[in-house]
Image 1 (cartoon, rainbow, N blue to C red):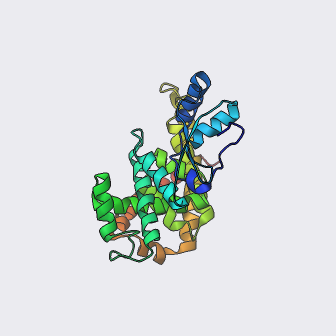
Image 2 (image 1 turned 30 degrees about the horizontal axis):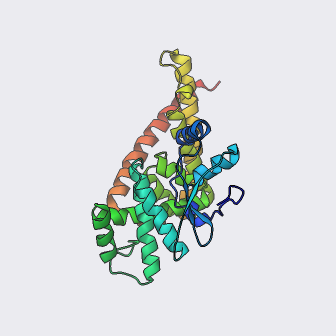
Image 3 (image 1 turned 60 degrees about the vertical axis):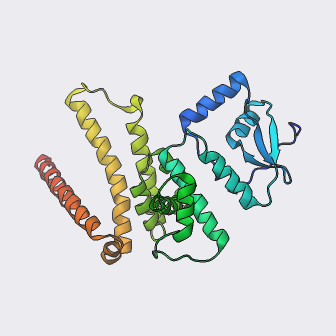
Amino acid sequence: MKEATHPKVLSALRSALRPLTEEEAAGLESSIKAEGCRDALVVWKERLVLVDGHHRLDICQRLGKPYRVVTRSFASEDEAVAWARRNNLARRNLKPDEAGYLRGLESTSEKKAIGRPEKGGQNDPISGKTAERLAAKHGVSPSTIKRDAAFAVAVDALEEVAPGAKEAALSGKLTRKEVTQLAKAAPESPKEVAVAVKAAMRERSAANDPKKKPAPDDGPEGAARRWIGLYREANERLSGVVMSMHRLGPKKIMAAWGDDDRKNALIEWRGVRVRVEEIITELEKMQP
């Protein structure tokens, strides 16, 4: 393929990729600048569509660097997507949630291809023979495959209302529990969920950025500044949660939670109430 004839990019194949972190993207760009694009891009022979190498293609086009391609034949787009996912899973630098997401996509796509429901729990994205077969294939348990499928469904649902949520979930800025809870609330409260996702991403990014961390010996004034910053972040996040709770109503929220979740939430909220009442008391004393 000539360099001027760039392969076409399909969203279904790009979404099969593991998103790069900022550090990984910077490292890949530095490598291509210094050494060129060492690995060939994989292109669907019959349709001239890029199957693997999207990040490398983006960087090469931006830098004006040449690249090589190899072609493979695929019978359909589904087959090309399945190959891209397997290729991603074979890479050793995947984090656990990234590997789980790709396994989940594989399992849910196979269920859609089969087109018939399987016996299992009402809330299981997959069940039965599909989970057992994929578990044997990837060397994990069937229950792990089911959890991966539910996680993949939740990540994609969350990405629709909060762009960037997928990268946050797969990079660890959002936990699996947070992804699941936010995805459940997304249909009823998309705006509030989007605000909560952005707040969580900012909080985790700041926590991992040494430049944004105050010095440990900055005294009472520094501690006060940190408290104010935490208050503002928590207030923004809590506002979204409260608005969502008001919209859903207590009955729906309680029905969605299990017994243990309700008990834990009650304990946590009672603790929050005690702390808030203490702060209110102190603020009232400071009123002129």
